[in-house]
Image 1: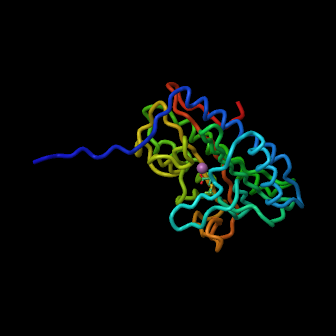
Image 2: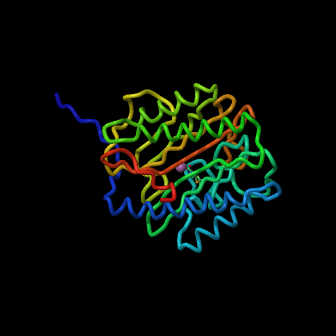
Image 3: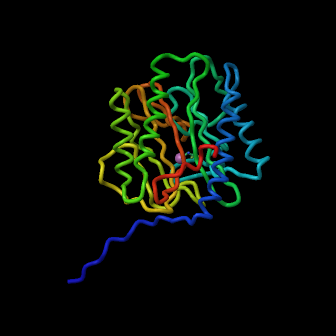
Length: 264
Ligand code: MF3
Ligand code: CO
């Protein structure tokens, strides 16, 4: 009887030098999100925000891995960023949508610089938002922080997902399950590393030094179910409830996770 070992998932480990290059891409992504985020105000369109993002990325010598991205079953993605408003969870195509007071606007940017990528997202409140929207923002951001705290050598992807889910659900919010965090490196969705935002402690892939990936909780104020709009990209809450999304690219290092997209 011949036993075969299960194939190990393909996960690219990075050197310290490679992580430093990803951090440079991470700094660019941070600038895009924060400089574009500073322009958010009632009356501006998501397409105008995209124009600023394009300017920053191209002036820096970077490029967008999103533009033309066409996984099976999707038309090529037609923009450099994703800018999702209110009930839009992720992957909304910037365009004519006009921002108004009280909205939640997510800028999600993945950029390439000198061959290396970083991916990050942040949801911004527009002016005065409802108490529910405020709570959703705080809880989603904190769920990311709690997920990152579980990212260390020897822990597993399930430890991250369990921490995110437990925290978000304790406020009565729900976790989007169809989309995960992912490996990031020389490409945007790299290798076979998947980082769900729900699940069980002690399950999933064991984390080791040199792994680089995005953690990106998408949390809904209502039910967790999603729908894709006719454009083939925009993912919205099925019940029309608000959604928030925070994302960082991290690197696993001996004492935990380094955040590569925090502007440092
Ligand atoms: N941060 C997004 C993600 O990981 C970037 C998507 S680009 C798009 O899914 F082309 F897919 F929209
Ligand atoms: Co991502």
